[in-house]
Length: 430
Image (cartoon, rainbow, N blue to C red; front, side, top):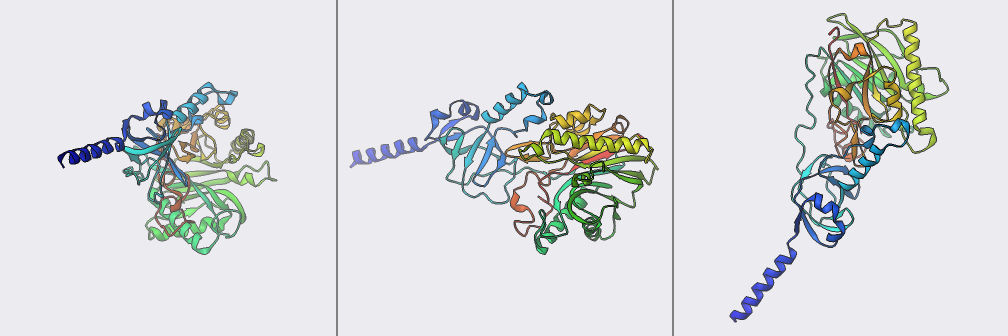
């Protein structure tokens, strides 16, 4: 009897030893994936979510950044640094297949002691829901120093009052949710001036947003909008909202119209603003370059021509002395990263990279598991000296897409867009 009990206990111990996962660091695992295929492992390295997909999560020891944000030489063709960063991202990431993980999951969430089965090269399978730790103070407002004006640049992702078009809300319920989420996000950012991308052309849509912001703040903040002279239409444009009790627009708003056959000239504009308390002025230009879709019509060359449209507009209003001010700040969704040719082309014309100076390793967009800046700001030398700080605020890019207005009933400010807003502190006359 005793011998039978002993054999049974030894069998249990052996079974426990077999079932116990192999403890290994991610660095060691990344070099020897094939050695562990079919085995249970416990990864001792803390991992974070770099990307969220329909059927899996992309995990890595640290956030994966877009190579085009750092790879110098892209403007001249092939970049050795670019390929180095691509290989680094590939070697330092793994795909975790797990059951549905819920809408509260965010890019940047971390997990320690992950247990999973290695089923392929950089592929893990977890039968249980891993416990991820959320990022704290993800949407905290940054310190902007001794700024007297707060500028917000924000892509609000196809905000169209005309329903049923090629983009934006399709029903009244969707549009109401979209309006509420955007208004909450913008009022939370508490800016004096908002430069917006992906808003419908014309006065109807932007006036509805301003009305919602004024209702939300119960009249304590006097929001108004700039009339750029566009008629209403189903076309993406840029727009300006401002605190009428803090600033006022001056001069005639400018639009890049040297290519009037394309609706893209609605995406490049400039407006002068005067701070009421000091009388100081500067010129703000909101822009939205063409997106990338892998076809020649969406190439870098097209975005360089977009940059030319902006520079032609600036030259025109400076020659005509429309604003009479060389303090110029260009913001928007540029649809390219810091080291890509359109940005380098703009910088070669004497402008300075604002976020590259104040927050070079930040991000405003997450795409296929990598993060970087699509939303950027560039200043003339005189304007750069009057900027106190610039940082993204992570209200959107890290949050799961199901929080969007099309996916459910969520009315928080989170994921009002797929882009994070950027706050810029300004002290005019500094």
